[in-house]
Length: 140
Image 1 (cartoon, rainbow, N blue to C red):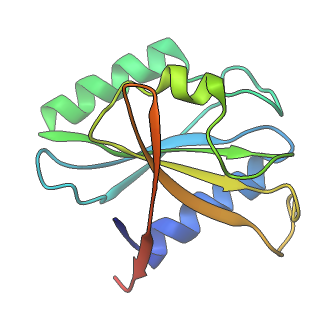
Image 2 (cartoon, helix red, strand yellow):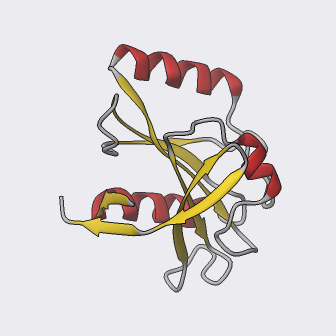
């Protein structure tokens, strides 16, 4: 199960809405081994695409060095789907390289940039196997 604060949940959704119609992407880092998402790190979708996301390789290298310096790891890796449900695509699965991370998908297909219905779902993706998990949103 993913336990995430309301503040982080809302930050992910806001980023997804702001970048719509392109897919948004980012990371929430936390202390190594704790499994606790703490630090919201929105990233730029280098692909700038409504159907695909890609972390800029330079930004990603910088992020991993920074997390290493802070004794952090990626606890949540998130991105949005702008026209489909919040379920990992084959491409998403092929890019899932962090077996301990929660892969969060937000679908803005119904709401776009506006307030309105969205999907927020979390998955574990290990060796190509997708397992959906419950999400618990808690206060700060």
